[in-house]
Image 1 (spheres, each protein chain N blue to C red):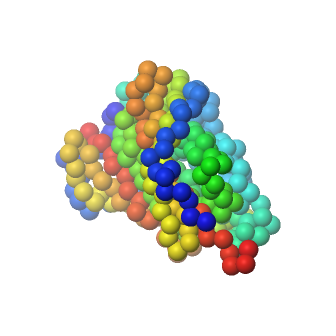
Image 2 (cartoon, rainbow over the protein chains, first blue to last red):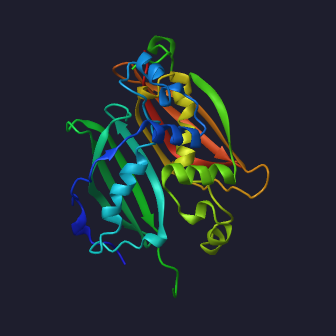
Image 3 (cartoon, helix red, strand yellow):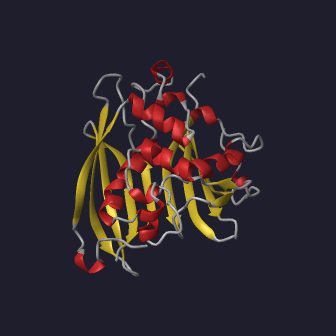
Length: 151
Length: 142
């Protein structure tokens, strides 16, 4: 069933702060096999002009996607998550995420489209630090595949 | 932010060093833990096949994280990345053997933009299939 177009433009309340820890960044960098010292060595990060170790560019997805759960699980929207695949992902950074950040995410439904029975949902997550400064915007496109015939 | 590549030294068409990233089942388990994405299609072959996939597939976000390493290793400072976006066109299928899968990534400068930034277009393939489309990064050079 097509999603309700009236949800386009709807914003959800900001999430509780997520505190970015050095060891969480290290764990993520190791999991993607990325040995860049800017992720693990505060001195190396400082030499590049950062206040503390920074996170790999895609690290923030874990935070923004959790926030998008407010949209995905909104019973009024009625998205069938069991049929959802990740279509596109984009980030635009004001600065890199770094250890010590306390980040909140505000999710907004940017677009809802229906194509060949698939529901396509664009969610924008605006990520701010504790002082209210913008850090990064994450755009996530989710595609809920059409239900199978007779299913 | 201190990229080690100078804007003036880069032309449209400049190729970045290409990389090949191996992915096996252990990689995916580890990424699941670090990212918090425990969708069973990334570690449970029975489940993956039940939902119509050929086998366990890599997290799209793992592939995205791997591909940008071509840019961050070239630029030196990962904080120099201003924008990064991809489309997930085909899954990276990861068989349960000692080889797993390979993700091959190449990249070249597609445009020189304002403020010492350049647009880099990335190509990522696995088993001959293009796994990322519209894969672009904007990076600020020195």
